[in-house]
Length: 350
Image (tube, rainbow, N blue to C red; front, side, top):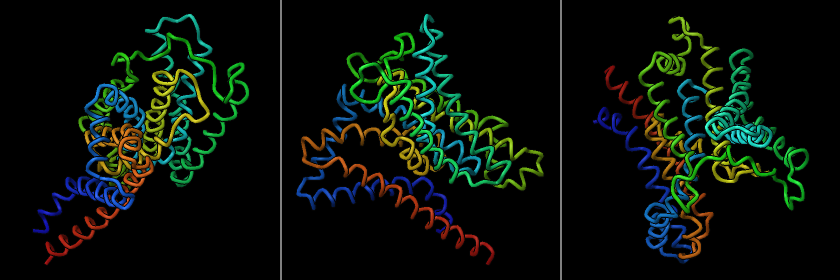
């Protein structure tokens, strides 16, 4: 019986965490005097079943998916990338610079070049803590977290000074060139081609992690770096590679925000996508497909929150409470799963 539960928990625990968080959200709605069934119906109908709402959901899903993939690839190598927010800001900066200062290129060249710059800026920001961890032994959680503040304040300084648009009432850059903007995929909506790029990135990452020797090396380093060394796998190089890749993927999230949605660099590039990505990656339990589905779910929550507030009288903050409880419940599930595994191992020895 314990063995069966042990096998089912990785599949059931994310669903249980989501359901439990939604139940807590419903209780809060009842306390506030709102009808949770009506509120949830409005939230998910607006975000998933209406044309404009679904377009908005896809728009929010794009940065969430890119940043979550970045957290996931780092986790596969046993690294905790909590610097997605800063990497998003650096990626947005890189694409903005190409969109502003590289002119006269056709869109077929300008768009990939701007995306490449965003990936490169984010990758450098991810490589720095990877290098410090691999070569100097510095904890990557501390360095990635601290680099978030540097990136946010760097972008803030730039859009308030050298990059600030002439006569702008608030800190933001001039518009990037039209040839560097991502095309809209759903007419008269906000949905742009960034979501297609994010899904392609997810597919490539799945093949890389599951079907390639490099994926085996990354997984081996994550499971047991000592054994990986005996297998002649360079642990240091693998750590730097995955952290740079994680930063590059998060950087593409910032690129798509600039190139597909805002068309300029704002002081507040991200409303916290980098931190949501951590929750998404943990809820997905290391699965690329799970990251795609969970990113869609989180995007739907964000997309429908405003309509839920207007129509059902439920504050937007309830959505953030639900997300927070998801993280709490998945953490509890990890502890329960570990305890069950210990009991299973003891039973097998007996």
